[in-house]
Length: 158
Ligand SMILES: CC(C)(COP(=O)(O)OP(=O)(O)OC[C@H]1O[C@@H](n2cnc3c(N)ncnc32)[C@H](O)[C@@H]1OP(=O)(O)O)[C@@H](O)C(=O)NCCC(=O)NCCS
Image (cartoon, rainbow, N blue to C red; front, side, top):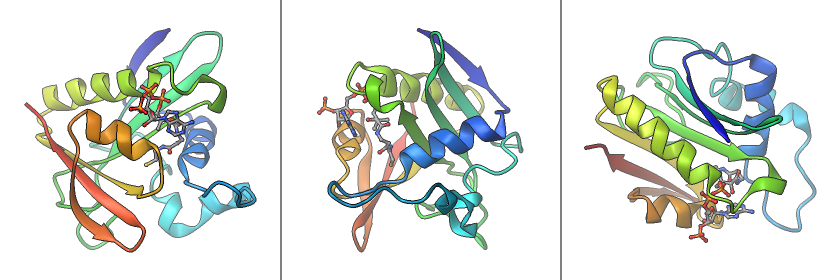
């Protein structure tokens, strides 16, 4: 697997992995792909390459996973907003490649690069039923807020 730090991403590629990161409860029909165009979701993946945007991709013959960070301002917060200088994490791995350690490694490398850029904490929003929450807890993210069926988690970087 080749892991690469990126400050820009092809929009179609990020949109694809963002769609994979939108939690759909088991048993529910998959969301239409157009869901990623909703304004509250579009802002997570549009024009990736702004100041503060940072990503790591995992590739072998194809891109198998992406972890990315984006800052949101206080007047246009994301679901996991904590502060204007704390970026929000997104991560997804192709369904057939989950559970191999790729997601954990993507986040580890992204945290390392973000720390080198001066980032001191990362936040995220995760559906409380999403098994990803176990991964986040295992690697040091702590719940700071519960909003309905989602939890906001934060990790201080060292
Ligand atoms: C969450 C995700 C990025 C983890 O990547 P991964 O490569 O599977 O992760 P790793 O192999 O490094 O770690 C395994 C952990 O991921 C989680 N995981 C494993 N398989 C999973 C699956 N099919 N779906 C969701 N999470 C899974 C589990 O928490 C597991 O932890 P555990 O071993 O303590 O049970 C990946 O499973 C995924 O893309 N899920 C769907 C998108 C998503 O939910 N993203 C987060 C939105 S907040």
